[in-house]
Image 1 (tube, rainbow, N blue to C red):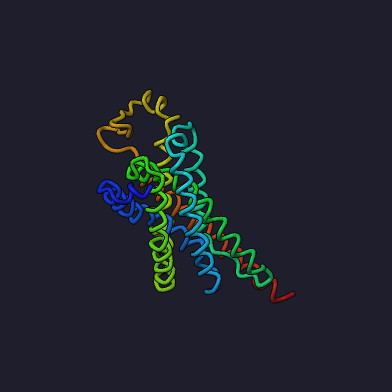
Image 2: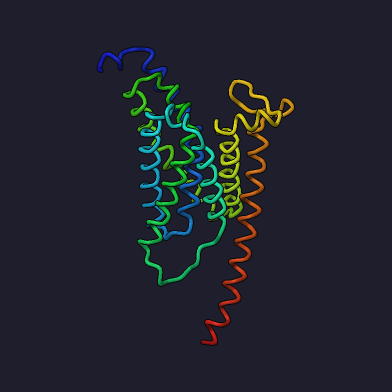
Length: 249
């Protein structure tokens, strides 16, 4: 094991792992920040820390089983539907009911983070596994180094969201993009897409030479932002309508 640390291949692989995780951790940081934004300051820190640690641990586990997982038909499709729900849910304002226990809110945020991390990591772990070159030690060490990257990213986004609320919509749109891409990337749909004239180049579906994944990502953004905004307006209207009744009673 110690000999592995002395090889040039180990350090090159480690650099690749860190680089890949800097890029891939962006999605997780967005989800963690969005889920924790409504919590009190103290609980925000707890949600960021626990959510970040869960994201890393989950990615390690998933990467170890990456090839087998992503070959399971319908897994990406089911995951994409979960992501659509999470993206829409994050745009809907939470009720500020003081009767709701703080611990319940924290657990709810962590649960949202866990589900989103599980789904979003499925599409990313293949790249991490490839960068590790089959070395479990290299994989775990590289991902452990990425923990502060995820925590810093989520903390920074939380501060920015307080000043620029539009970032919440952008973050939800990003989740919709990932969901759309994942939906059309499921191997179970390849036969159906092919019958409709979709061509596959290196495993990626294309229509008229244009990436179907990009098109689906754009549609995913529209679905999440439009539906989330609509439901948020309806909920706000319902809360405002209920306010006079509470005052009268």
